[in-house]
Length: 208
Image (cartoon, rainbow, N blue to C red; front, side):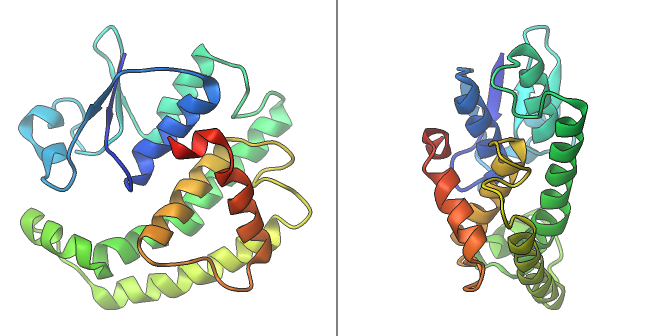
């Protein structure tokens, strides 16, 4: 196998690296330079026509994309420790929180990134992507609201989906850390979310 990867601060490849570190899995990495548009090259589009990373190349030549799908595949090969849950209830709750993190926090953050951040201005121009700064700023407000919501939701527990570290925490950490890279800190009054971030960032896998 081979994982088509990119260095920090790209959040999606980092998700898979953290997952692999938690599992003790070693897979060769091949860098795909996002800044230069390598993920949109004809060569790479044969691996993922959507031009996104990460992509996991299997030994039979199959290509898997989408971070959660890649991690589910690896979980099936390496079920311990379980990061997607073991019981039907755990699996359902963790899947719910992965979806919530991605849609409620990750989605508005991506719109702030594309439409307002200086780093993406040149990239969008190069790729012919229109930017809508007002829409981006509206999503910044939504992001702050959703972070405050998540802070309330995790009251009384150490991790996003319960008492154990799971894929939901990996998804949330990569999003929150990417927001920090964008100079969007956690809201001042989100003490629980700050404590959670400190807790999960202390895990060795967080440096992946």
